[in-house]
Length: 167
Image (cartoon, rainbow, N blue to C red; front, side, top):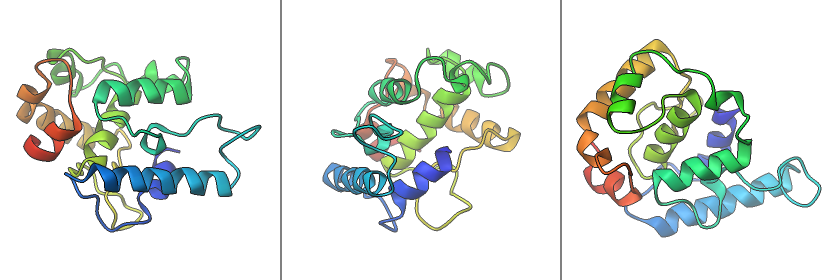
């Protein structure tokens, strides 16, 4: 399901300009429009609010993105109660983050939205998270978290930090 949302969100552009929040907001508006047109969003439709990547305004911090994702999926979503172990948990907990599949998906999407794609999609050339929780992806995510731990040391990750300092 996450890759479908990423596909919709990123299908309008070959690249997200990392430092251009206006472009991110424009793509989010297009995403909302597409979701409305295909009947998923609005009124009595399936979704009462859009996924975090499509919201207005688009979250500019990881904390805001995680909260928006929780609001979208609901706190009882299995993704927030699974994936508690593995190689990626040590670097996540070291920077004060929970270790679950839902957070990892939001984190990788957040980094991609702001220009730093960790896992290019298998479904096209646009940037998206392409995160499926494989062992190989978790190892790469763990390495990225260790490299970027200083950005997360204050318990937050901002769009500006991703665009300007993520490596």
